Amino acid sequence: MTQDLSILQLVLNASWVVKLVMLLLVAVSIASWAAIFRKLFALKRVNTLNDDFERDFWSGTSLNDLLAAAAQNAKMAGPMERIFASGMREYHKLRERHIADPGTLLDGARRAMRASFQRELDAVESNLSFLASVGSVSPYVGLFGTVWGIMHAFTGLASLQSVTLATVAPGIAEALVATAIGLFAAIPAVVAYNNFARDIDRVAIKLETFIEEFSNILQRNLGAQSASGH
Image 1 (cartoon, rainbow, N blue to C red):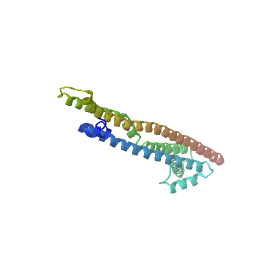
Image 2: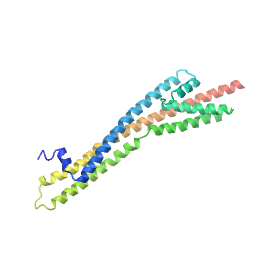
Image 3: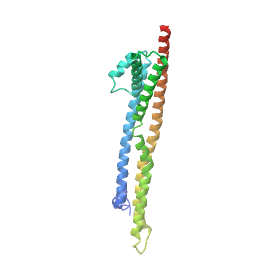
């Protein structure tokens, strides 16, 4: 009896529909774990690059030198560095058009940084919706496999003269394995999604804070240039 009710035997003895459900859930679980590890490494890299650039930004390096470094390091730059570069490029483009109004210069740089911020946030949030879908749908897919397996088991018992627990248990146990695999796929995805959502919120707040601080620096520089011009 113990051998017949081992997990491997239950999977092998399940109906083809339940086997397909189990196979689908295992594939989804593997894909979600791959997405989890990719997102872990990606967020770690984003935070490291942002911290490195923020340290350089507040070290006293000139804005033009930071822009030149960002242009040379475009492929390996982090989100904060790319946001800074987009704002500075727009600022210089407006200056090249002989626009001297401080408000216009500041608004142009801020709009460019906001657009870059949205692109960076979309990139950081990639694959997050997949984890949310796995966490919400997998239990129901497993439940479908369980319901189908139980229905299949009771259909097979209808032809028997006498039904005992020993005859019912294997079929029900086979069906319940599908729910267990569904939960196995869903729980890590839900936990990872919640953690990543919280981490991404922190990244977004940090980037928004940087945009405001950099805008203040540009505003002070424009004010100083305007005062010196007078």
